[in-house]
Image (cartoon, rainbow, N blue to C red; front, side):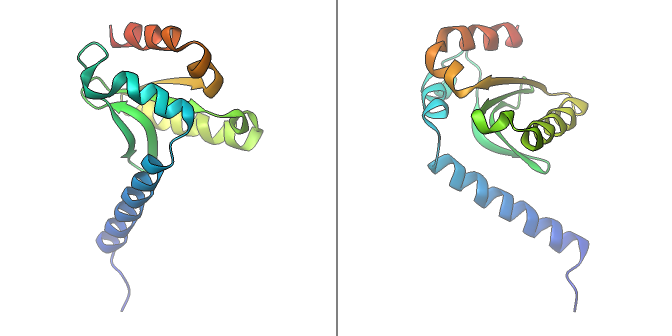
Length: 124
């Protein structure tokens, strides 16, 4: 007996949720530092979630109410294959009404106030 379309979709969603949970436990230093500044509605009273599945992707941070996605990228994201994957992910999210802001790990660690200001601007 084969697994139906609905069963396959449910398994993919469960797998994505499990991966997101694992990523929350394995945050980078930059993700941890930004989370400390945006959790519990600290930024403009806006609720953010971390490592949140959206469609086929997991985003680093998102305000679902404001449709703002924040991605924190390490140096390996400058490699062509990952850069193309990031562009595809951003395009998919933007087609669904999300605004996507991307920051480098070192930008978050060295210029947290600048990152937060860009986020405030995006939140309007």
